Image 1 (tube, helix red, strand yellow):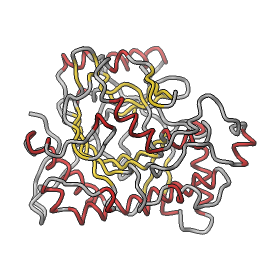
Image 2: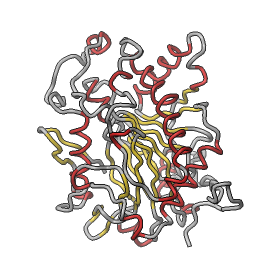
Image 3: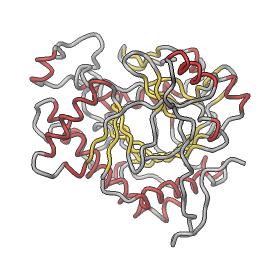
Length: 387
């Protein structure tokens, strides 16, 4: 039987306490030659970690802290659009409570979960995404369940299972903290990088306005060795995310990989007490390609985690639905040559239109994802997929 955590205690709400499993032991060591290293990676499932920058958000409100973090972030995005943040104002216990709630959601019966199914075919992403909806290879379907909770505003109210309703106050507090104390700080840093007013991106990411920001519980069901072999160990093909930022709370099952500028795949380590952040499409459009949407994929975990279901807690930051994805005017973009409108721009497309079109196209069953390298989304704009 697959395991996600060992439950040793019950919380006051009756939900078992969530405990993270140990990290993989299959990691790259020092090898006598590059040739031996390559052979080891192939033969022994050795994990080669990406080297990512870590931002300490506790420095944000210190004198000179914002600019220091912006400079550090600028350096990070020159190399790869992934980075870690630490000291973001939530305890590990608070984070693990969200993992515990998410686990309870997925333990509900399929019949009950389907009552809250998202309107995916029409671009709706809030609610439940069932297992096996997308064909990843001919005859093989995805191994993910998702439950998305939208922002807690009247325009996005919807029904939820009882386990979410009972814990709504705690979930809302958690989600609003991510928005107010994490995402907003990162948006300020991007404005500083572009030499724009600090509140520039905050004005198009207002919490009380309609957008597709959401908190996500996600479960990757483990696969058999035979299934992984048929998939060549790739569970989700290389892709970019739809909005501005994706925040992944640390969980120890190694499966996320990021594509380097050289076209190599590196594993993203579950850094202790961190959030892994990646840039997404909207920021790339708004900066005319300067801030690059990060290419990443999900693969089969190393052998010592192969039988474990991978549970995730994520937060997706997206611009307000009405925001046109037109490049901003920035002296930095001018100096670096990113000020000219190109055929790759999304002028005339709003953030809401882009997200809804990508969601709807992602549920199309006309072709397995493994067969796709590019897919037209809307207004002549396409999404690319990577092996």
